[in-house]
Length: 234
Image (cartoon, rainbow, N blue to C red; front, side, top):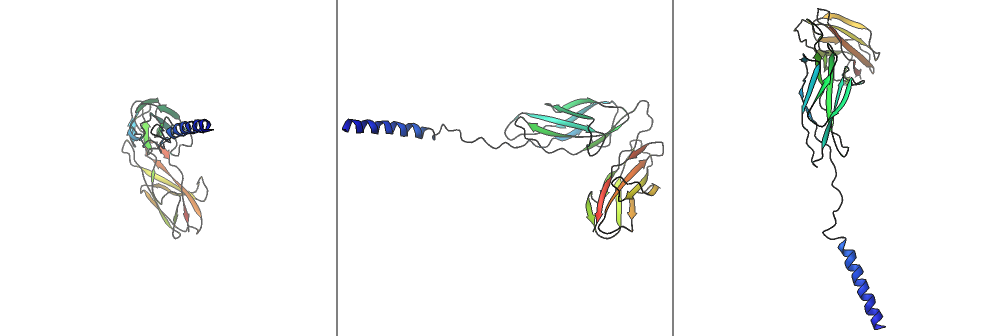
């Protein structure tokens, strides 16, 4: 009986010793939480750039990754400011990429970073630029940019100051047609060929969503239709 008891004690000690070893310094513990890379910043082309060559070299500053993971970049190019359709959607492991675009067109582009474990950064800001056309002596104006009221905002009262900014590569004098109504694609022209970049909308209905857009003309045949903006009244 004594021998059997000693044998059992030895086996138990060995088992305890082996089990305790798995919780020692050799246990790597849980994997660290993977975080997204930082947002890349655009270098070229920046907003209001005229690209003479339609083989455009897109450049950006590198993102950083806290875990040191390898990063790739997704570059999106669109003719629409909301990127509802894409002219190009490409990836790059470096901080530049050549994309061949159509001549004589206005484009928007943005970029984001993705690490090898699938974490993605937010998109960068949006850059707008033009490609020069064949033998073009006049370029289209840039699409207008909204100033106020803020997109999808709610305003007090039954009047609103609609304002925007616009520019032109050729420094042509610009005029603006303003469309405003309750349709998501406004067709009611409330002002034509105005030179001011502000329109005072009055007589609005309370608790209503309004949509407006601005068409920019340079006086030399160049016409650019802006995107549709919206706001609501209380």
